[in-house]
Image (cartoon, rainbow, N blue to C red):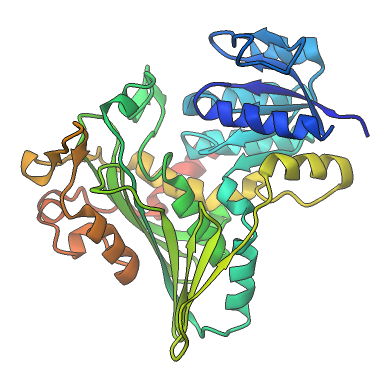
Length: 395
């Protein structure tokens, strides 16, 4: 079969990674880049090796002109729904960056649109391409570690003021009356929650029974940069995620599965698994990873199962919806953070706090953080989200 014609929408920032990945697959004859959609045209240097690629700021016009079969959407979060539907209506298959939408209602619009159009859609949770995920699931199913008692995830990253100035929508909950929800749990460290849900086998929207959130920010932004949540699955299992962009030191994020006879930890960016069992020394195992674009191409050419179709992002989107509807994140008092020598903001003790959250499956307010106990915005459960969503879907 001839190479699939691909258009890339959003080719800078993280989009530059997608451009490199398209180049890799093009060299193997799997895809052909026929168009780039960006607010500013790419230079000849940026497009080196891609001769004759058409550029346009209008995705619809570009898809029509190029006859593209597949579109990669790596654009600002609030644009995802309309651009995805624009492509779907033209019969164009999709690789849609995470988070797939800024609200559950828009997520459902995307689901309905791709289903009605009969196109394939892959959601860009790249960590779910890790072969460590099915390996851990098989290990847990075999019962070698006993019963799963809970799952905790932790993420400590450092971001400076420039990170929040990179785009108008950065760090916003809403912009120009449109949802954005660009917080630590829903965008930069969204993979922590998505991976935890996948390891639990609770990826569908109906797998979520409740979500509690504690959302804070040290930076002067609208969204959250230091937050945690605890999700209860439909079968009663607890999943916690604690994450910050104001860490003392950047560390690899991880998901820890607690069991009655040991535990298994996945450092999902590295595809590294740490297996710990009583009476045995720690065991490290490195796994490979399947690229999501390559998986999508194989799905279209030989029917290979998609790794992350929209329905497998449903549980994540339920949690995002809780965050969207939660009270505005609380500004941390000046006493709770400090400036690092390089000018970024740091929450002292947060690195240990996120690790303790993953260890104990507890929220910040339950771990003795004064700033969390005194100013926690409280919890909002998905029952309220479901009632609101039913009303939306009825309209």
